[in-house]
Image 1 (cartoon, rainbow, N blue to C red):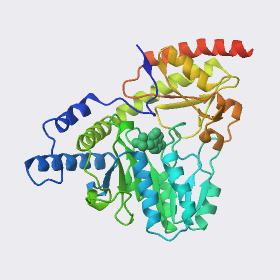
Image 2: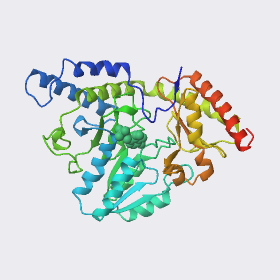
Image 3: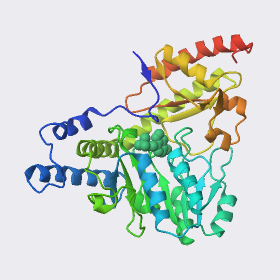
Image 4: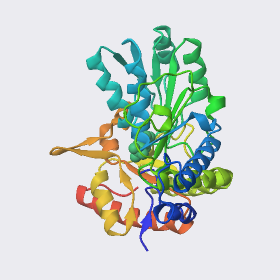
Length: 382
Ligand code: PLP
């Protein structure tokens, strides 16, 4: 049986979410904007899902804007806000996902100044740098709740309080956090928050921006005025219903999920430490319970990934192919990880269906692969 340990890339659709979706892919085919019974049924389903997504993050249903993905949610937050404000200062974390970093950087051509908040070796924002930046009174700050590669969790409520005290708007990409740890939109004090269904056992192609009504944004898509004019386009009814169902399940299972993931993670980490010569990134930071990102010298993460895939184990590596050479992950670079160690980075991310057997299978395959790879490069397995 193949072993899937890449849940931060995407999760399998929960069978109960699929079941909730099926009627809206078949007989309930109405357009929520239609006034007849088909339309009304679709509208009711979207409204129910809006409540479910809002409940997951303790927001008001009116604050939920359904989008086509988490990427779109962050683009709407950043570009939508910038479009209605005079160019000023936008600050983002050094380990942001490209769905935040790219739209932020694109604003430079419109006269915005973009500052990058550095992180320490654990992947956490550096307090003194943050304070210095806040003195410049940025118009907007975008910092992710939890990092997709390392699982490192930032103290978003503390940061949001400071940003608001300085009169700025705070956006957080909570795509990896929601459904894995407690995320409370209302209590956090953030005004904008991005979510994505496929990271919490919902379908791909649907996300949401949770937006406080105090923040005005220009829509990215104009047309029929759906989502109160903030995101035109006929709603992906089945996708939204699946998102709602998955959000509801994630909320109900949160405590149990957290405990199970933590026990798998702790088990994996103690096995990794026993192998020796391995660095677990962000080990001292607060992290998602399902994520372990580690690196080692003398091994190419991408080669290891491909070899493990051949053995039926799906994980991610921390390096990305850039033309003819491999670049270590920008996240690990920002943390100041030695490039040689970062080159050998591997991310394991557990999910609801992961088991102890998966950990055993992974460790057995990794041990074999490391022995082979290190033999080729003349390094002993520790
Ligand atoms: N933000 C983070 C932290 C992610 O990990 C991802 C997905 O990999 C996204 C945003 C993008 O979400 P989506 O795939 O729904 O566009």
